[in-house]
Image 1 (cartoon, rainbow, N blue to C red):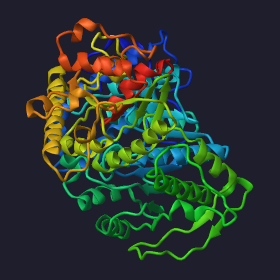
Image 2: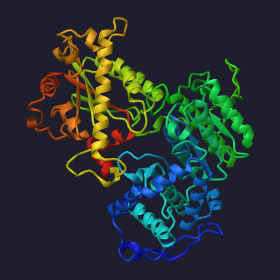
Image 3: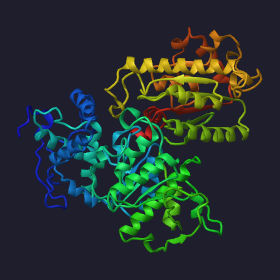
Image 4: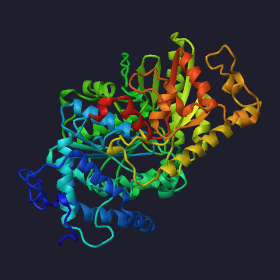
Length: 589
């Protein structure tokens, strides 16, 4: 069907190619465009799919009939040149969960890459550049490959669209379809696929025959879409199970486990609970070291071991020459599901767990007198894990004798999350200052197109930051008035302490409401103020901007005089991505 209009990039001719299945329609490797589109052109065009107002209206209508979402995804896939059956070739590991699913995928991908396999990895969201979402052998695809496959898929969809409201897929759907094309054309041995939201009706769930599925820790998130109880959310997550494909989950509360058990029985798959990570360790003293910090990563690592182990078994490649020896232990707790057997990990597995990197999750960057603690936690359970990690590593750093320390929280949250609950969880970290800013790297307009979000306005996000600041201040005031509350800086500071800021010692409520929190219009300004020019990677903030702000002015003195500054950046993966874009220039190359 002829398109309604032909954009400037439609001069690219789209020729059929074979993708390994007779029904596949795709594009020839020789169909290189006469004029290659630049990467940024591809990103700007991709971003237009964020602002498809008709699609947003359609999503609201389809929530009452979610099956239509998968039906629409199938249509888009076919229009792009692939049939659903083509995806069977990808040997997929499919992973969902509320927290830890990305880390689990990263562990599993690294393990299997260590086994000599060519891996594909699809995840979301990206931190700095969108091509991070589609990885080959652990690396984001190159700008050249991204541009090549983007225009192939986009133009095919453009050529086949009609006047229907859903003539073009939205942002996440498009990238999912593009990832399938990349993995098939680049001939990966397997694809690790992270669910976007939920599971049952997520667009990644169009796949029919995964090799193995996993469910990481469950919690409350995306309630408007998935439901307002953990049992409703578990039902959605269990929707990725497929007949005959084994599935694994980590230890969960009984309620969601019972729901997952019912889903597995209904769909027809075997579901097992992963053992504790220490169960894999040999009696001789093998200790498994993880590349990702935090005790919460241990259950993710166990899930990844089971996923990788099962994939190798089902594809006839157990251990690549190293026998995997089961370790039999009696479970100490009775679970509603069978417990998977622990096994003695092969060397590629041990090295895989140790070498796993996953930016923006329990990450530490040291820059002279500045320590950045970076974690994209954005649910109650993940923020609790972040707090445990931060308290441990920050305290260990202080014990090393670095001198007086000032702690700064940089926070933002998006969506329908209960930010007051998240901020309350963060208070025991004893922050001297709380800084709130939107997920915008810079207000000067020099940010990269990959991080632009057209679904919100600057006024909206700044209003949200002011609301978060108000919630934080009220929580601080409540703490100061509660004699039974755990000690916080307002209660325990002394003038000679590194946290002995006179700003935090004043007892008046009015002063408390303004004493230790600030709102900035972008991440760059927030970090410039928090570091006071002591990180050479950041420009110094113009002092005139804060000349008449007493909190900022007084805080600037304390920050400049402190021997060390600890900055925790958390609440949103998009916030973390914007910060990393400023702090690590290599990520934008």
